[in-house]
Length: 329
Ligand code: AMP
Image (cartoon, rainbow, N blue to C red; front, side, top):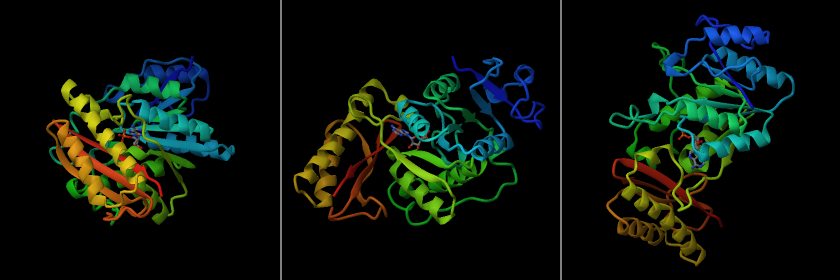
C-alpha cells in the first residue's frame, strides 16, 4: 500500500524536505500541524507520496529528479478530483518518471459573484485519488503562499482570451495564466498535462508557455465523460437531479453537430443553431455562447472549412457548464 507524508517547511516549524531518515519522517509528520484543515496524520515511515505546502521543497524535489535524469510531469488542478483529473494523472504517469499534482483553488480566476466560496473541497478523497493514480507529490499551498500580500504581478494573454468564456468572465484567464505561470516556476517540470475539456484554457496556456519561453511541453488530454456524455466537472455536483438529466443535452447536441459537419454542412450558424435548438428543447437554460472556432487561433468561423472546435457555455440552474468537440478536416 502506498503511504502519504505531509511536510511543512522549516520556516513553518516543520523539518526540511526530503527527510534524512524514516525516523525524521515520523517526527516530522507528528509535528506537522495540519494547515487549512488538511490532515497530517495519514503517515508511515516509508513514504511513496508527499504532500507539500511550501515552494522550496517542491523545487528541490523536481530538480533532484531532473538531476538524476528523470522526466517530471505536472498536473495542475483545483481539487474535487474526478475521473477527468485522474486521467491526466495517469497520462502523466505514463509519460513521466515523477508526477506532481497541484491542488489549489485559485481565487484570482473567480470573478465577483462566482462560486469561489462554494467550490467543492474534498481533500481526503483527493489524496486517495492522487495516490491510487500514481502521483508522487501533491503541492497544496495556502493562498498567502501563492499570493503574498504585496504581490502585484499578473500574466495577461491577449487575443485568445477575449472570446468564448473570456467575453463573460473578465479577468478569469488572467487569473489562470498567472497561477499556471507561478506553478510552472514552483514545479519546473518537463511536461504539464491539461484537459481538452477547458479548450480555451489549454490553447491559452500552450501559447503563453511559448511566448514566455517556458521550457515545459504542454500535453493535451481528451475529455472524460459520464456514461450519458456529460463532460465530467467538479461543478456537476451543483446540478439537481432534473438539471443533471437536462445537462446531457449539451454533449448530445455537440455530437450531433459533429455528424452534421461530417454529413457536409459547412455553415457555422446552421451548425451552432442546431445545437442551441437541441439544448433549449431539453429544458430551461441560458446559453452564453455556442461558437465554431479555428482549433489553433480560436477565431470564430462563419464557414467550417478547416480544423475547428465547437465550444459552448450553458447555464443550467446555478451551474455554468462548458464543453466542446473537435471537428477534424
Ligand atoms: P480544474 O480542477 O477544473 O481546474 O481542472 C484541472 C485540469 O483537469 C484542467 O487541465 C482541466 O482541463 C482538466 N479536466 C477537468 N475536467 C476534465 C475532464 N472531464 N476530462 C479531462 N480533463 C479534465
